Amino acid sequence: MIWRLLVIAALVSLMAGCGGASSEPAPSSTVADELVVDLGAPVFTSDVHGAVALGVAGNGMSDPTVAWIGTDGVWTATLDIATGIMGQGSDVSSGVEPIVHPIERPAVAVTPDGRVDIAFTAFVEDGAASVFLSQGGSVPESISGDPEPETNLGHVTLVGGELVLAWLEDSTLSVGVSDAGHIIEKESVDDRTCDCCNPVPIAVGDALVVAYRDWDTVDGQVIRNVAAVGSVDGGGSFGDVVPIADDDWFISGCPFSGPTVALVDGELLVAWMDGRQSVHPDQASTSIWVDRSSDGGRSFGRDVEVVGEGINRWPVLAVDASGVAYLVWERSGPDGGLAYASSSDGGHVWQDHGLLVPREAGDGGDPRSPSSIVHDGHLVVTWADSNGGHVAAWSLPG
Image 1 (cartoon, rainbow, N blue to C red):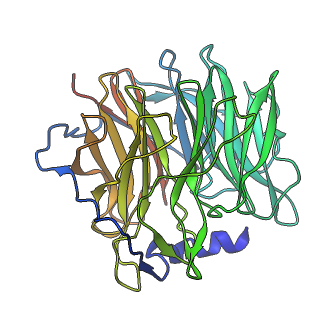
Image 2 (cartoon, one colour; image 1 turned 180 degrees about the vertical axis):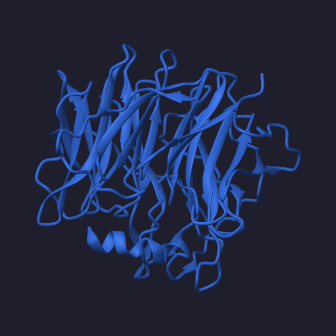
């Protein structure tokens, strides 16, 4: 675990690698030139003092919930979109000390009846960690079995109103599914995964799909490509691993940036970062990619490159009521910040709008680890920087 945290700073520029070859022609960029969904300035920005990692979730009816991790525990609060005012924070950690780092965002879900469930990772013994879950403010309980040195929480979602989580333990993918209100761990769904790239589950019709970064070798070189695995029985069993990325990314270190997922008109969108296009030994650029599945995650089409200049990572997807998809991600460097793009045709064509949140002057540093949802006609985004946590909302067209 310690080596993982120490190497993050070095990976901002990314580790040495070489571009992979493909027998198929490289996909061309399908980014539109005209900016038709430029969101402008946020309607509000709220600061969350002491927050190091944040997440946001909602059920589409009640006010969304912001969850955050700081040195003083794990907290949740409701967010009033009309005023931008955060409610009274509630500490749900009950003495369990979470791992405090921007890549270890809390996973939060809000059930249809308004119950807030939050999961997070915590060191428990000799540098090993476990995944803990608090449901409705209950005392958090470990749900990941024996502590492991490399434990990385992914995300949480609801499938048929039941909680589903996905996380990594020592390069293996685990999925937690609800059984009569108790979370049952499904171990070793895939035992060759990228160590620290958060996996994410999603319900696609009656199926459960988990997107994550796989680990494999080609001619003795390590590749870390995005893939998916699905279950048609609520997580009781899983099928074969399905490749999503259609070209290999050769990289010898973990990039600390997992995929993101969303549904548009019943079809699955997956977005991620990789550096397949870089021919430089210092991996001088990384792209944001999107792919689609129209058959519930059993197969995927051709990758679409949204942006390929600079260091881009940690994308998050959100979709509004009209089916417009919004993609927000980190762009590193002096001219960086949180960038965003949108697609109004189900993810075929993307419009790159530039920066949504510019990098702060002074000691704020790069905005990191965004999360996002669409709620009541607004795009709500959270992020962290050197000054703490932040929540902002932008009014969406229409």
